[in-house]
Image (cartoon, rainbow, N blue to C red; front, side, top):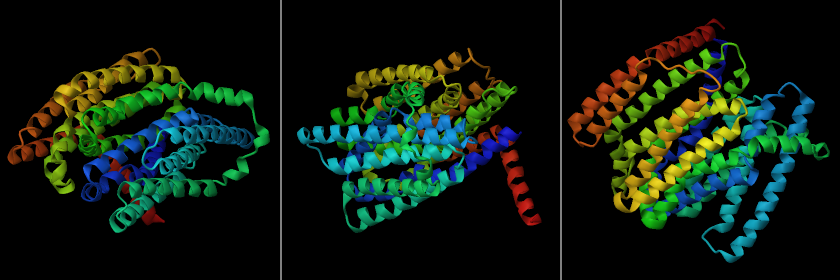
Length: 472
């Protein structure tokens, strides 16, 4: 029970912070679709996509290594200082090399906002690293506050630069960079990171160990990038930037699900690392996997059921085509839930090579399906390739993980999940308001019944907190 309470507490804290950044693009969707033409929005989406690819390559996924090593030395000040110092040595050296190479390449390859994009990459590198440091040393509240600072800054800067000053794509990229920078500065000051940095503590052995852990995550990260966002590159090259703008909008809704999963996964990966060798490990991991699979499945099918009602309210009519790709992308996001639950187990056991291998398989499938079908079925190919690759990765990891531990699911869960998704998706494409209402009612009832234990436990926890506050 202590493990579950610890996981729930960390999840709630991280949720309060990450919801500001992870869901910010969704909340600003009406603004983006009103003030940016499809080509501009498609360009910014492509820039964001490439930044997410480049940053982990620059650092060789150092931030994940730092997090994992700091978890093991939270109470050892000297060891913590050693990890901190070598982290910054690697980080600064990697950024220095990248900046030089980027400036050389940009002399020959001219593209829009190239120096602004460089600034964004550098800031995002520091931001990502500092956030993982905060998690590694157990400063979850500071992690959340940093995310809130980033989220609020993004909203205000987007309104100022896009709406007031009409800066379009330039304003949107600038907002992202500055907002991430403010969040990073907060963490650097709040955690007093300068106290832990001593370049005399350079340790080649530790650097080698950290790279041994993190380097297998680089192909994993690239593979995830291919599965998640290579679609944008292929769409832009074959169908054009406007089509990418349409696809980007359709992706915003499933991204809510992925964002919520990402929030949970941050606390889940920490709990998995802390309790991977516990005697009741299999029972604990099975319980978490069952609960989260049911919860996210219902969130996904609920999103499909509610979409006919909210889509016209949030999206400008020029992006109407995006409506048709959402259910397939949501289905892929649900497969991704199970993938990430299993991934935390691999990371906790420091089996990063297995993580990379399964991700590469998914990436290859995604690329092949996308390239073969996109000329025939257009944007449906991008959505289908993502869902298919996620499904294959999910199944592969499920059977591979049996070699290391036993995760047991509730009887009949798979059949129920398949049936409710088929029901919701079939009615979704009928485009009939009465069938949409029927779908929504059925899905809500199903969600309550499937998650009644989780809802009851959550209610009792909240009531307990209020009673304790009143007693004080």
